Image 1 (cartoon, rainbow, N blue to C red):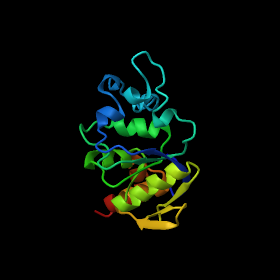
Image 2 (image 1 turned 180 degrees about the horizontal axis):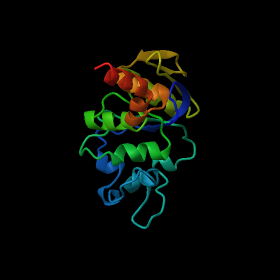
Image 3 (image 1 turned 45 degrees about the vertical axis):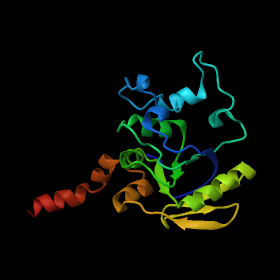
Image 4 (image 1 turned 60 degrees about the horizontal axis):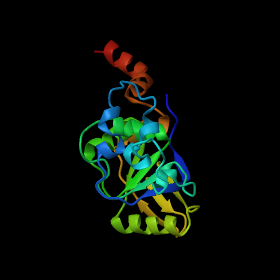
Length: 195
């Protein structure tokens, strides 16, 4: 079981860069591991650290004025290869949701499989959200999964988002695919018995 996702209010970390691919999210040299542990340490590694391992102060994850469990990203986040490690890195860093106007399909599904909610918003809403964060990094968003809405609390503007009903159920209950099957064990046994 994982942490349930119902309603989340958080400050945001802005990444107003379009076409962020999975190699930028987690560089290929870190893909040797077969478990999820430690990937968050290398999220955006080549943007966060120089070749000597020193923090690049200008990168948003190294800026102490930004914090939160929501990453707000530019259009077309998660393009490129199908590596699930990218979703592991986003989740491992501590993000519960990523907001963008477009996600690559494979990244979107990998994120959902790793209890990270990808929230697709209009380009207008995304632009307004970047502006609100820029004006005051303490501004928050509220993501209401049961209602499938996201609210920019600085302006009060709200948008609806879509999500696969099965994945919504899994997030609301803190299930991965195995947990979901185990939750239906009695139904499965009854069906087999009556077959």
